[in-house]
Amino acid sequence: MVKLKNYLLSNFSQIYFSIFLPLYVIASVIMLIKIAAYTAFIKLTLLEMLKMYVFMLPELLFYTLPITFFISAVMTISKLSFDYEMLVIFSLGIKPSKIIVFFTKLAILQSLLLFVLFLVVSPHTKNLAKNFMIKKKSEANFNIEASEYGHKFNDWLVFVGKDNADGSFGNVVMFNQGKKDETLIIADKADILSEANVLKLNLTTGKGFVYSKEALSELKFRTMHINDTTVSNIQTYKNPLEYWRIDTEYIKKHANRPYLLTKYIYNINLKYQKLASQTLISLFPILSVLFILSIGVINARHQKSFTYLYIFTVVILFYVGSFLITKYLVLYTIPLVSIVTLLISYFIYNKKISKRY
Image (tube, rainbow, N blue to C red; front, side, top):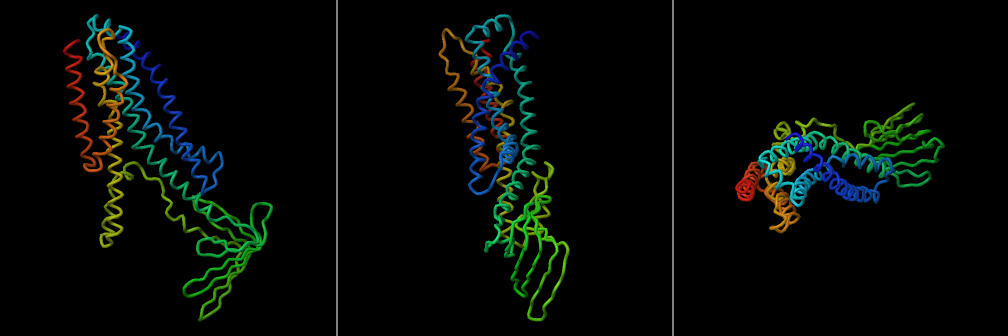
């Protein structure tokens, strides 16, 4: 039995990687096209594009791995059937249940990896990607050219007299017109800094004037920081439990603000729909184990092979059904689709495999 397991594992591994690599390349090309589209409105260096690709990598692997596992497992059994090796295996008294146990162990490992990807890794990388995009959009909005008018930094109108060789600006004038007063700042030098994903202007050696109907105030400074409040929605990383749970404190706080509460509940519903569909995708390797033998085992002499048709039928019905039903049943979709899939797979397995072998 040990030799049989090693033999199955060897065949499975060869087919697995031969299928995974093309799927991974195709998915990567799609991801890179999506990243390249961002350059239409923000400036990205090659290193930053690579960073965005790394942020998207967990999601890419998540949707690629389960399909790869199922196709590889079925094709492994199908190949052995065409070579009459499955017939020999069953003739030696090895029951189909032994092979099912072998693939179940592999499916459990695959599902555990998928759960780690979408429950733990993806929330973190998505948060990093979102904050990175907010920061880059803010930088794109703040693109100052010397001796040109019309530049803005938050509510401030900015004019710079010259560009310095070190990347800073000289002879900086900033103006802010508030509801009750007006503020004018003059500085010898200004640097654009990015700290903790927050863009800020660092002004050096200057004066400030605040004018209102009541008074005119003057101040002198050596250093002044003005933060970009447009990136105030930068989020710190939440642990997986906080990311997926419902924030009851937020609901209580905004109980008297229907618009915000409705929007939050809508977003939570979308998040839980995604949680349900991704949980099912993570369980797909385990739920589809009985299909592996049901589809893969054929009599090469007396039966026609519809292996590819059956593979795509199972994958499409499972994925489409999962995504559609989650829109209506949300988390209840998990037990419903799981039970239905197991019952259908067991019925086919019992009729095609158990009674024959």
